Amino acid sequence: MITIREEAFRDVEPREALLDACFGPARFQKTCERLREGRMPADGLSLVIDRDDEVIGTVRLWHVSAGPNRPALMLGPIAIDPSVQSLGLGGKLMREALNRAAGLGHEAVLLVGDAPYYERFGFSTEKTGSLWLPGPYERGRFLALELEEGALDGARGLVSATGPLEQKPDLGALVAAAAQGAWAGLRSAH
Image 1 (tube, helix red, strand yellow):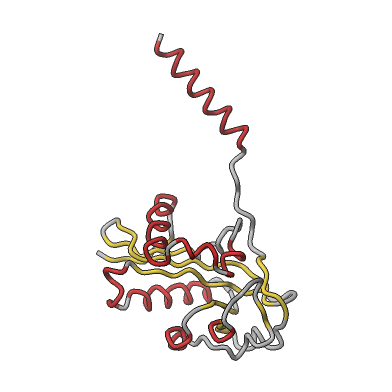
Image 2 (cartoon, rainbow, N blue to C red):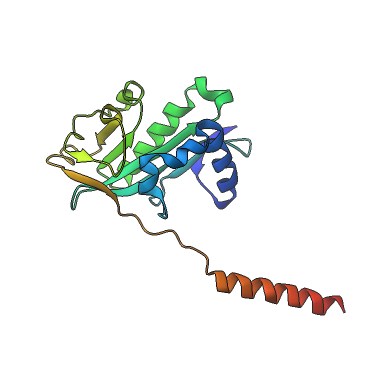
């Protein structure tokens, strides 16, 4: 059975493997990665396609500012397992992500991608002409979709990350916990 659901912790490893299979290590060099580094994706907008407990699709959206004081989301990456890419699952996942974003009150989505593919979802370069990204990108691939009409009217400036920072584990606490676990294991063995 195929379902679209929110990503769970158990999906992290298969999601990363899927992204590696679809994009390879070059994905970490992309400009949009600079907007995701060290950030949490937007709440409720990390989705996977699950087929019988196997992750075969993924998409995440991230909080950004489309110029000063202009909240938006950055979509990406989106990936579908190569073995099922011609089944329309990418379109279903994209529509689900956009519907959830709109339902959560988000007003605009940006992405860098293949214009002919994303045009069918309403994305275009019409609202990105006065915006720029923090690194190299092809202008014709920088696309936007207004979920709320007029959300990007007059938007200009640098697109920057605004989402919450990723929680990094405290190394000292991890070492202490590991030491206590090891010590407890040694004591119980005697």
